[in-house]
Length: 74
Image: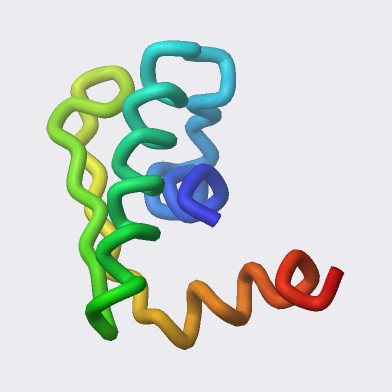
């Protein structure tokens, strides 16, 4: 979700080629997942994620559950 969102917001820039950026993003996504277990909304914010570009996105628990629905049903 976040990788696609970053690409959409930044004219198709693909951060999947940068292992460090992916690792930082994954860490923040994991933190947001834990926050959503006790809150209805979480924000993922990373300064200078890729080529000096900052990234920020808010995600609701409902959106998170929608994204993970296939995993929850399995």
